[in-house]
Length: 258
Ligand SMILES: [Zn+2]
Image 1 (tube, rainbow, N blue to C red):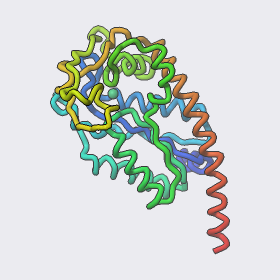
Image 2 (cartoon, protein in one colour; image 1 turned 30 degrees about the vertical axis):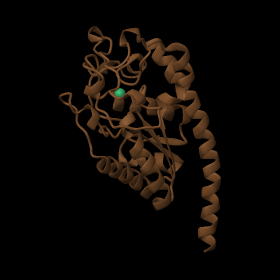
Image 3 (tube, rainbow, N blue to C red; image 1 turned 90 degrees about the vertical axis):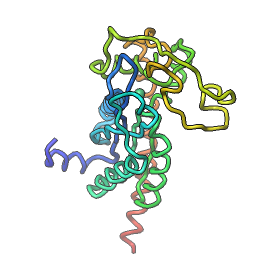
Image 4 (cartoon, rainbow, N blue to C red; image 1 turned 135 degrees about the vertical axis):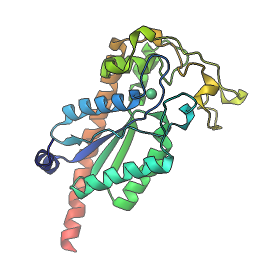
């Protein structure tokens, strides 16, 4: 887009989609940009479905990735930096008239920052904001179709998504199983549901940077996962925009009265 294109798009759009990703190792078979490429591609599909009510921002292509720093090439932002970038992108688009936002997140390490930032954006800037780690929207398909015992990174599910959404990030001839070692502390189980949180690093839990069994991945499975997530995201956003358009016009009336 040029600024003239953007002027037209921003005048008709109610909501901006902002993809958030990372630049981090993804095992022996995928490149650093996986999370950013998936989030951007998902954002594009979502924007196509909801055109002309939404605009798509460029992806925030770095995230919070300390836990992958043992693997050469990974670049991390400090949580403060990541939060500031998200905040400033939203602030800028709000200056251009957008009042509603969906952050489409492709990277688990960004979640705590997105939680904090969404609260700040709502209460400091007065915008309506939601964020989604969109893979979670496909949990039913994942439960039914993904066979690996362990998932979560460069795994069967993520590699399938990448094969469908951004095949250029996958080196097919190098696809291999994760060399998973398990979490170091007994009570943690799979590391995220025990009620105890210990920040861990990926070299502590896998030797090759991958989890699960990516040899089971396919573009077909990726499409199933993404179609399911897309359906839910479209349903949510339509409802979100309908309800917040009303809230905004009420606020607008108040402002005029004042
Ligand atoms: Zn990833």
